[in-house]
Length: 405
Image (tube, rainbow, N blue to C red; front, side, top):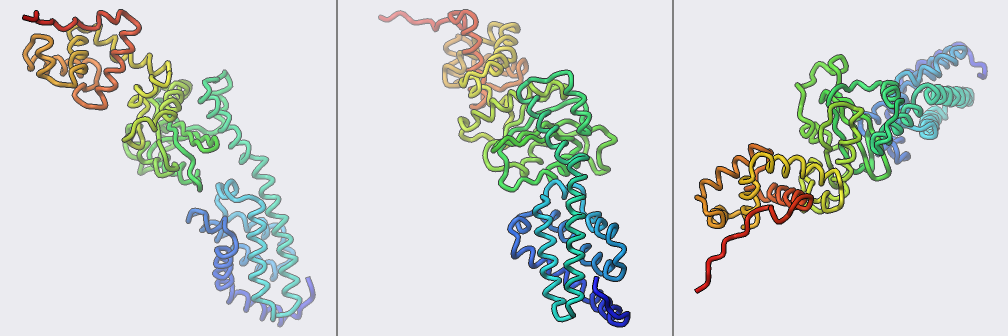
């Protein structure tokens, strides 16, 4: 660095300290004006980037006072950045940040002499090398490896190709989930903030594995171990409530939640149901967001999903058939007669109250209520599929025809 007199250097240092706050403010404003990626960042990340810029200005003043402190002061700039910032801001963007900061500082000190301008250029070079070193070490340590490993784990779950190495890979990711798991499938938003999504998940008492597959965003959700929860974590929420809280992190379009499974190694079953539901969700005109995959069983069955067909038969048709033939007969008649109690009673030669009682028994046995339009569709699809697999002619007695006169 060029020689300066002790008095001149002391005056320059005092002046730099006075204007450091103004320099930081001007730098943030210039970042917003010239770097589109900075303006599009979530507020928390913009704040983190601003801290790095401010630390750079402060560290330059310290370095100007003690040039031999270059190695540790330059590296100390990036200590102000949270670790997740290294995953969301590329090295190229970091160099753009350094360039803007240097430009603003150069403009402000232009009339203070060539020696100060040269000092800024020399220091910016050291900071650029320090930035490259930080990113190289972060990439080697965890960053990119974690992302690739997580993508591999999610892909294994989605394809159902889990192997003996899956548990160890999950453990390497620091998975805090235990017990029940569910898979949530939706669309990837234009500005996907994975850090915010993970923070929301932690507040809800769950851990997540995130998979971005083009326009599709997949979350594997597991209940977090007690030691991994925050102090304000609520009691365990149903997965549908958790999906509702995570919904803002997805893009527009349908959002489908797979059924709950006992453990992460069983997540493939939930994933298959969620993916099948996501593929046909548009067929339900007023589908809620999020919607459970099991609420899309009719659409999935019509699309040829074997899991949906099996679920409908095993959870509806067979339990009713095993419980009572009268329940199957009454349900068929009720659905065929447009959910009319009177028409069903006339066909079966029973009182309408008897029909009401049997329909209530149907609901008690299988958990679906035939009096609702959407659930009626589910039940009728199950009866059709069940009858196809058995003797369709035995589904219910033919209506008695009165002799004509």
